[in-house]
Length: 461
Image (cartoon, rainbow, N blue to C red; front, side):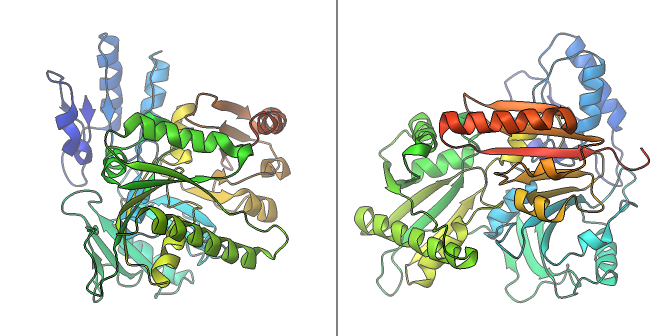
């Protein structure tokens, strides 16, 4: 097992007798080169032994995965990528904030805080990074963030833009600091957050406490459930499963199967009907009314099944940080007077499942990635300054509005399920087939969940 420094905390789960080889790289310290690490992978595999390359977070997100894939493929060595929970999802879960927000933060950009030299990447699209309507996640920014913040402010981003500094997420010494980009290291009053430790005690005013756990479950594969998710499910008194109509019965069947796979105690599992959004009401009003109706449905189930309080779990597809409204529903219940604590358990997103299924990294080396929706892509086209796009919630195949020259697509539907479908290749030739296959799959199953990654050849490459 070749492991990075940040993944050493889980080495206790390695098989007894396995060789553990440290290959972590730390700034300012003697470290193995990436070429050496890649060569070790090849040599161990050619010796005929099973090799694990253990990385913290998700291997495909700024994890130097591309170089290792290239080395393995050049040597003809087969491999499998296991998706993980990214630091972005884990930090958002710990802080109980989404990375996206309807109508105000409809896209997310992942960027690295340094390139292979340890400095800020020279090729930075400051106009995109300074966009106040986007959420920007900066990975590994400890040394370079002050310089990046100065550049952002100089490019027009308000110094008062909120910033969350997340360190050692998921570890006992985790800290989350709420600040601004102007003063990322100054801690405002009450700014340092710790992972909430919820408890089922009755509040002082006598109300019954609901200890709500919102659990990211990945995309339906039981093997993608994290240890934290399994523990939270088994600790719950009640798990609520939303039912979205007969045409989407597969969705609740998958959630039931997850429960059957991992529950070992007396946790009660109850299905409830999820209200529909009114398609004839203006969008913003329709969403508000829909969320109110969902909150009412939760409250009715809590009153019926947890009248004396207790621990409630809801299983959320993928991860709560991306294009999900569950946290806002919980806020409605608390605003309405329900005594409730909330804990968020991060999950593997469909984006991580997609890149693992295709055995590709999410990003090119040190290059940014933009996560957006099909609607935004159709309305605004390919954004400037980025060559890799991840597109979610696209019911109309917005990629067919793009110039396909030099663009490669990796597409996946029903990721992690028994009937998973994948396609990849040049957009010009694969795009029309995806449109046809998608329509056929939707007709067959009555619903579809899919996602795709687009990568174009950089100008001048």
